[in-house]
Image (cartoon, rainbow, N blue to C red):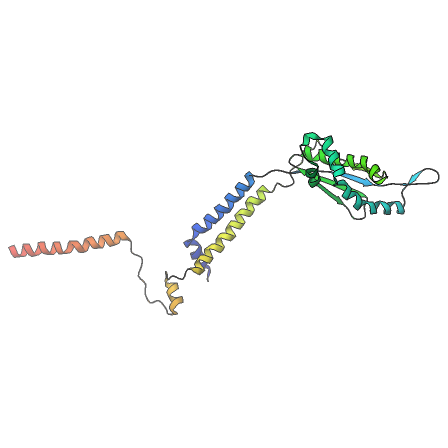
Length: 251
């Protein structure tokens, strides 16, 4: 197909393209109306137990670091356990969350070969997210001596509840743009699919393609108003002829 033929197909079914774009755009608008922002807060915990020298001074050596790294995977599991989340719920009843819900919100991460554990929380408000993150870190630090019989965890960076960050899931503008792009692509696909499935003969190009013969002539489209005018002219001719005959006979 040539460019002219492509444009002809689009012009013939332009309404399909417009309707598809409008449907995709409306779907994006409805989705954005149900949008609920989520805010993320995090606290960094450092696992570091220095060894004690003969003089009573604390020092960090490679053996203690290696031992702490091996404990990190265990600590990550303990942080999300019920023994920690239940205490978080007890300390903050205003959250109206269960221990299971708190555990589901916790995202634990640790950079490879580092002694830092990052505890992140996503919630509908940043204040709630910061409260859960900080409380989880404090509860974990207070309970780890009883659970592991060792006190080697401290807070490196706490979440600041006074911050006003942007939502982490705000993609509404991108979704609108994406809906327009998808609508155009889908619309063009439907338009050319309908043209491909349409095997009716409508133009001289269709005749040439169907018969493999050149078109010698074609009848232009005639408007109904032209047909009515022609019928009126033809119906008026006999009356005029009869009048002339009557006039000639009288002479």
